[in-house]
Image (tube, rainbow, N blue to C red; front, side, top):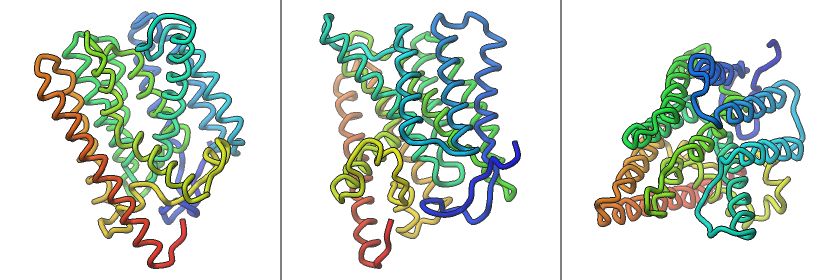
Length: 320
């Protein structure tokens, strides 16, 4: 795998050429689950096939690069493949329009979360550590509702993330690479589709959204700011654009430092996970409402930090 390295520059704030092989370990974790648990879920074979396609796509991007259009088309094709076996968001009325709407929302969910985790992978330990926290709250809910097969997938991925983190934090570090970050994003999106979240209450469909709140919000808010500032004007420009204007970049700019910024985002991720678990408790509607309010306050705080960071950066004459 010689030549699979990340070179400093652009939005990348590391200072040395670094191997991009962390995704291999994440992928092997999935393979181990498949080998040790044949027939785990009817949809797991297609889920693993989709994960393999996303992993290979990212590996090719890490090695020699791919066009934004190629990456997007493959991701959409993978999304449609998993939808074909019943893995999709379900909340609209039955009928042609409802079916089409659910397919569109599911494609946006898979492609969006897959890329959101790629965007999040900007500081040592940020993507893998955040994913471990996300997966912990996924598994907490899944085991609490007796969804053991999906919970096992989440636990296996937690193990892969935790095994990778020491290599990411060491002096001779290894990065996830696009193969690893997009694979994590796809797996998290897939678990959100494999699990059953709304037990008689469609508001509980927001549980996966809350658990994955940080990368989703960062992607949406950053996209809005880029469009507003004229940095991107089309989907392909959005896929190609690479700027140091994400949440974690602004935290570092505010003086937190890289490690403290990572810990800060871990904390927000955990708070959102707690909100999601509270939302899952359908017995207490007041607590569910308060969990949504808590999430709203957190997102407002994140938006404020980004806007203040942009103003401070503009005041210093920095560019993204």
